[in-house]
Length: 383
Image 1 (cartoon, one colour):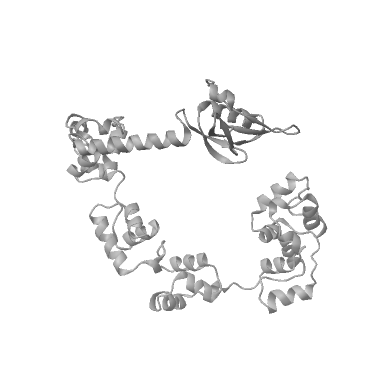
Image 2 (image 1 turned 90 degrees about the vertical axis):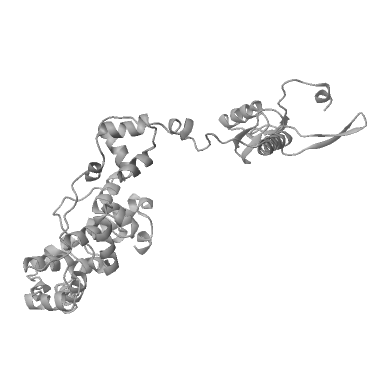
């Protein structure tokens, strides 16, 4: 059984599920805890493989005696969930027989959360709801609920992460018009922590789209943007808001903003009016010629193109014709190598090097070389 639990849930076969669910009577809750997924995922997976899922409420006799259950629950203080996991017993069945044996559940430790206890631990000792819950042995939500019922002010955020500097800076930034989201990003804290600081200091949240009120009329902003040609950033700086606020105002009234290319035209282009010296132009021209020469030296003067090959990965071929041949081979699942080797030869007492374009290796047939040519020259025929 341990070997099955080491597998991934998607690797389990129908026989594995039947062994766990049918033969060993393990329920959905227990299986979900073993595989660390939801009961719905377990149910879907079993149904997909054809394993019939039991109807809710159908229980089986647990593999545990009344005396053992009494010892684990009352003497050792284990919960029914832990007993179910450790003993590999269906949780619903265990709970059903727990009642059938006549056992009564333990008294909850929440009765220890008295007014005096909480006042001492929460207010005087400054402990959080999490710390109190762990010490007493109850859930954090139970502690928070009890504190609120008794009139204690419990922060919704993580109060333990709020320092004096963070609180001071948050209040100052918010007063200067910085949004809560920007504050949380600035100080790398949660958004709920920012809300908590504001709520504890009695500061109401700004109304929605309050940043738009800093802007004048729509006509004035349109004049600055379209007639005067100011970019969004300068319009925002003029009225003391963000460029996003200006963009939101235009979007609200259906006004289209300039495209990236339009925003770089004319005087708005950072290179407008910049004249390169003669020396600079010669350097730029020389660099371009060197780059083109390197490409021609490496790949020839055709139209070099990068293609994906099955055996050599991505390769740069020397022409669009060769690229088309590669695509043909790839489409028909024909294995090949591009320029795998070269041959030395002597023609008219001169040494030449010949490198065929392709070594084609069709399945079940002999290998052969393939040369892709456009215009044939006399030297090509001799090679």
